[in-house]
Image 1 (cartoon, rainbow over the protein chains, first blue to last red):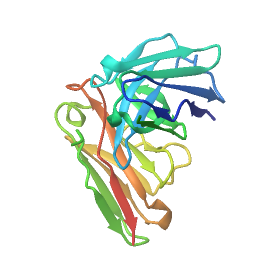
Image 2: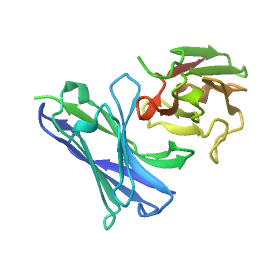
Image 3: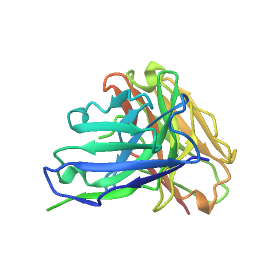
Image 4: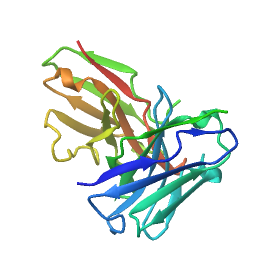
Length: 122
Length: 111
């Protein structure tokens, strides 16, 4: 069974870059069957898909965040990462790393990390 | 305002049946993209509940079922139990927006 664990700073200053890493265990991220990515949830709000990455490095980003998002993968460490630049208070949220399953033209999300709360504040 | 529309809340007594609707448009569910459902228990991460409209992952009780018709999808829960009290989210793909979209979530209260 795959387990996902987010790590990174819980506090980021406005205008700076949020950086998170997800470590996968119980399975390799280099499998051809899955993509990997991030979803966030603002306090008391709904879910927002941020983006997805394949082990080869192919990415899909939410168009509303695309200009600020960079995702990368390190297969040697079984990790993938998220960078979100120029953060504002609106980026304060619980960030989940998630395994993506490709089906009929898009994804659903079958394994989720426990989440890490990131607050954008000075 | 979420792209997929869900009722903010539903409720039911133990043992009853409840349904949660997820209304989309011609650029998402209505375009033929699949609907998926997630359950978020208080203080925990969401969990996949129904995938590809009407499929249950291993371990999800058959009290939970999904359906899709036209521009909408629905989640039905029968034999309601106290442990079902949670937030439920639908998800699909939107071709106009070019990415995954979620409903705003529905809070289920077991009376």
